[in-house]
Length: 508
Image (cartoon, rainbow, N blue to C red; front, side, top):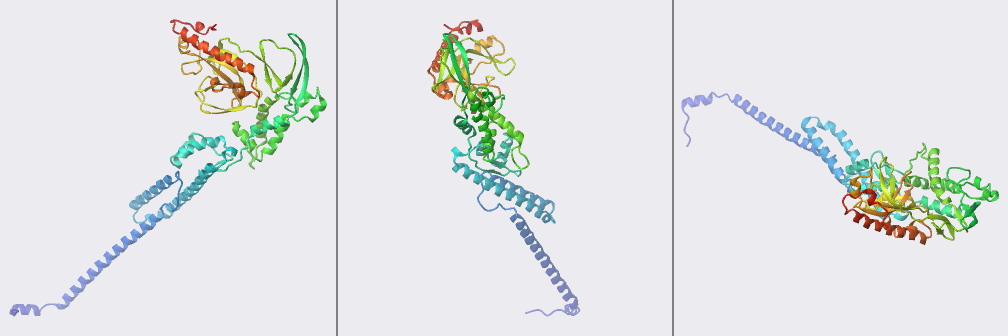
């Protein structure tokens, strides 16, 4: 039971200001409501911020779809960069970071559009180069530089860096656009050298040029010289129709010259890509006019190069009956005689390079001509050396003509010895000799290449229409003499104080 309040307590209760209490309660309730509203607003603000951040991040997502192996690493890297930029921007400018997002999103979208295009181009490149008819498609020098780089690149950036170092540029089949996108347009292989060669063989007129009386060892004989007219008028390449007309005017009028064939081929092949392929194969630079056509100056330069190469087809056929000197060997080509070739000469002597003071040493030499069209030969640094006796890089030499066979002094690795002066070191370095085919390539303006003979079991098969037994015998003679020199040099070097002169004396 509750106790009754005392008098003082009763007076105290009766004297309370209840209006004030009610106001106080109202103020408290209003304060609590305000706090609740502020808290709700804060929560709403955080949610809005999260929604804005989520919306911002959505603008930097990786596009859906499959991407090429070189493109996907780039997309992932770029997305990471933009997300990091967005985070940094929000930290530095929390109140207005959203103002910059549209510009960033636009940049990001443009990059993704480029990557999508690059991916499609490279997927298409893969499909084309996998299923392409490689035998009838022309692969340019730029493509041959590009494709190994492409196959080993880790991503687009790696690809571009390697392309820059290798100086890869676009051409008619390999398109490299200003924005970096790459695509490939297969072009039919027009086989310019092969086509011109066949046309010259089939179409160029072979005319008697002149007859001359020669005094032979056993009397007189008449030699008739038949040549293909190289050009229409006298020039630097060889016999012309104008010169033949002095001996046979009527035949010269209807003759088809090599120049006629080259002119006709260039007109036809300008639109088909053959002229560009010839220039590309022979590393000739050319200029295009504003319409994308070959400039007249470039046409003349390319024609001049073709004529210089094609003039080799005008080598004369000689019919004769007199007996040649015993030191000569007849080279039969079909039922014709190409002329005479001196027998192999074994006279040790220096052989120069193009570098002043640099030379090698020649122990024997055989000179001979050939009647096949120029060849293309694959070479490596182990078998082939340039005019300065340095190993070549693995490649294919085009427009190769044989110039003869030589025996060169070699070191223990089989490389031609390089001399500046005859010194004790040179005596030490000379390990033996080897037989090399000396060739001249259309890729080199003046120099020669030396290819180890043992890579060509039938040299005359490689360079002549009909192999000559006589040539083979002379080459075999050189191989045997080289083997003798190897033994001779090896034995001589066992002796202390041996001189270069003693080392290179002709063994009996």
